[in-house]
Length: 267
Image (cartoon, rainbow, N blue to C red; front, side, top):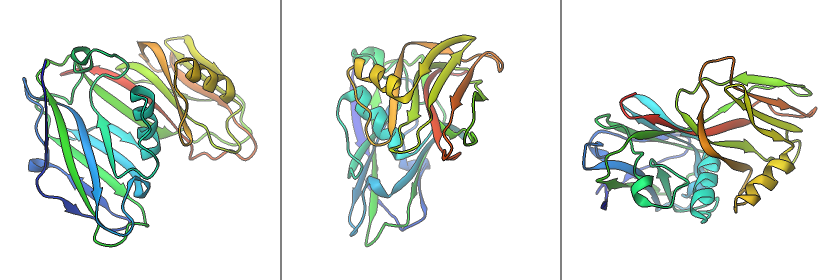
């Protein structure tokens, strides 16, 4: 296998509380022999311009969303699978679009951005961006024929406070590889449970789930933890897969849960 790296020669100026969009000629198209397996973001200029200013990251392929997470979730993914924490205020960071959790680059690049689907990267910015700030975007390409494309998604559950067995149904048609959950400093859920196709894959208190993450050789960073499911599994039809929680009295319904999944190219 061989990988190559490139970047968009022109940067984009950014301002506070806006969304920087890279699309069209800003980004390469995944084609056989040159599939996009990652995007690279660099902050430069400005008196305040780093990842702490990023409120959300989205990647769309052919108009369909394949990445939709906060930077906090993306940071945890990078740390868990690379062992390197880019930090809350990183000036450069990576968006993986290949298969995570395997060591061989040939197997990693079995997943890539959907072939033939134009990419769009959206970086939502907070109110703290100041000065002549810019963003520069690059990419990593692979010649490995991909079988899958990734889904990296986090959404609010809207669970009420003081809830018992609050649940949301899952219907992801891809293979779910990892489960991500919040670890707020105060008032975390008292119990998490993940059921896939009627089988409980994860259940326990936050401390118990963090212990499992530590057993996998990693630690949570920031306020997010990630558990690799040690083998991907499909969520399948609604009614057989769900996320369930018990929440404390001061729980925030805006808290998000996320997952990593693999979908078949062309599916």
